[in-house]
Each structure stands twice: as structure tokens, then as C-alpha cells.
Image (cartoon, rainbow over all chains, first blue to last red; front, side):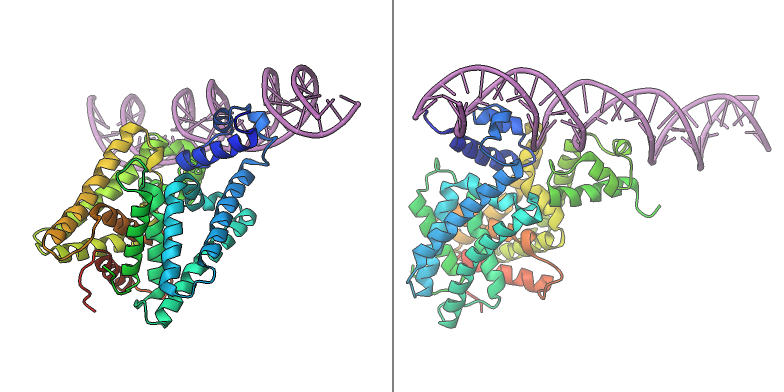
Length: 193
Length: 193
DNA sequence: TGAACCCTATCGATCGTTCGATCGGGTCGT
DNA sequence: ACGACCCGATCGAACGATCGATAGGGTTCA
């Protein structure tokens, strides 16, 4: 077979949850997109909600681990931030569907399933907070409201998943580079250009 | 009567659509929140989808008109941007539910209803584009990718509706003021502080 | 032969919507 | 002034459709 059924289910779920929302996606839509009967879906998943949680945990977990590896051993806060922004923007541009599911559908999870997702997200954002705090201590960044600035910066970067299209004129490298510049400006770092 | 039924329906819809999503909100949930029977709802609305579209058009229409009035006659691009950011941030902080509905549920509208909403949003964003373009021409702002910068700035400001809580330490004025500073930084305007 | 895989058929619940009816307060003609 | 009439507001009940999920039985292949 070209693509295993389990993988087809996963991909169909990501695409449909991202475009039509979790509640807007029926189990039959999912089956049709995965080229299976609705009954056969349940050979590869638990409940629909567990499938959603699985997608979220996978996606966030991968991002968190990649981010940790990317900044491992990097001491300069500006360089840490640069790497975080680059990874974040590229991930959001390359996998907009996964990202949109994670960003938009957290609220539909029951508290038990939501907890693990929120915990992963908090761990990830802590990487940003740490880098920002160190940059402030080192006198590299300047902001009166570090908390607000951090969240504003994250929201700005999250937005990429909502609008970027690879069919546009902008390459991924250009995009990430520009966002790094924007991030440094937001953080009040001295402009290198 | 304390609050007219029509108004109760509207408020209930905004709250529920914002917190549970359009597809996650049943007509019976809506009826319960509005203290009506599900049948009586239809005395005050068309279909559930038309109710959603009405909310969106009202909310965006008000924002657009207020924005136009706010920048009317203001020639300095930086001042125009300052006013737009202030209005935008305050609106998103004060009416997070309306804003979240507009931002998150556009995709569920059928093309016919979506068109008018998208048109309003485009008109509103054009106000930002115009101010940014004039600031660039005047040499006040500096960015290599005006389009990307504009959308990144808007996404940053939109984020306010997703996290701001009036129970926090930050007042609305502080919040708006800080976002104005962030916006000026993003746009590469000379720092005033 | 038995596990993996996939189906048709079906379940009870819930969905958005509509139906027919009731209630109370105006408004009319006389 | 008083029935006759109408109308906005609201309801319980029900509609057909679709929901997420399951039961149970084939087929394939090691």
C-alpha cells in the first residue's frame, strides 16, 4: 500500500480538524478522507477526542524536543531567541494545519486530556521566557513589561500559520529571517541593519 | 423585563460561540443561556448561521466605523497608527468574546455570508496598510517587507483577545500604551523612550 | 488457525429546525 | 364599555438528518 491506513487517518484528521474544526468534522468525513469506512477508523484510534489529543501531543512534543535540541549549549540570549523564532516560524509555515489544530482546538479537550497538552505548551513557552529573561539581565533586551512582550511576540509568531502560503513570493528563509528581525525589534535589541 | 429577549439571545450566542465554538454550541445550549425554549429562539433569529454572521458583521462594522472616526483628519502616520493600535487593543481587551468569534469562526460561514464579513475585515485592515505605507514614504517607518510586517503587527495585536484578563495587574491604558510601543518598534520607528 | 484488517448494518443520542397551540395585552367596531 | 379580533411572545412536541460509536461477520495472509 502507498500510505498505511493509520497514517492516512492521522493526515486526514489534521487536515479536517484544521480546516473545519473538531466539532465541524464528522466521523464520516474523516472516514471518507482516509478512504476507510467509519467503522474501520476505530481500528486505528480511540475516540475522536483521543485522536485529537494524540495529534496535539505529538505535534507539540516534537516542537518542544526540537527546540530544546536547537538551543542546547547556546549561551547568547539573542542567538537563543533567533533560533527559537526561526524554528517556530518555519514549523508554523511548513505545518500550518497541525499548528492550527493545536492553537484553536485546545478548548474542546476534556480537562484530563487538556492537561498534558497545556503542560507541553507551557514547557515550550518557558524556553522563550528563559531566553528573554536572560537577555534582559544581560542588558541586551529592553522592555518595561516582559510578560506582555513575551506573549505579544509569541502571538505574532503564531500568526504565521494563519496566513503564510508557500505559493507566495516569500521563501521560508526570507520569512524566518524577517521574523527574527521583528522579534529583535519587539525585544528592544539594538538593530543590526 | 430586565433585558429584552433579543438581546439575551445575542449575548448568549457571543459567549457560547466564543468559548465552545459555533459547531460546539447547540441550539439548546443557546436557548438555555438565553432563558428561552429552543423554539422561541427562532422568533428572534434566522438560522444559527445567520445569527453568527449578524454578530460578526455588527462587531466588525462597529470597529471599522470607530476606527475611521478615530483617524479622521489625522495626517501624521505615527499618530494614525497609535490611534489604530490603541483602539484595536482596547476593543480586543474589552470584548474578547466578540473578537474571538470574528477571528475564529469565519471559516464556518457559507461563501455568501462570508463575503460581507471578509469585505469588512479587509476594509479595516486597509486603514492599517494605508497608515503604514504613508509612514514608510515619509521615512518614519523602516521595514523591508511591509506586507509581512503589517500582518505580523496585526496578529500581535489580535492576540490580546486570547490572553488579556481585566483581573490582572495591567490596566487597559497600560496595555494599550505598551502595545503602541511594541508596534512602533515593529515598524522600525525611532524609539521615543 | 488466528491475528490483522475492513466491511455493512445498526445503535441510541443529539442535531437544527418547524409545527401547532397557548397566553396576555392592545385595537377595533359598535 | 365590551365583545371580536389580532399579534407578539413563548412553549412542548416532534420532524428528518446526522452524530459518535459498536456489533458482528467476512477476507487476507503469515
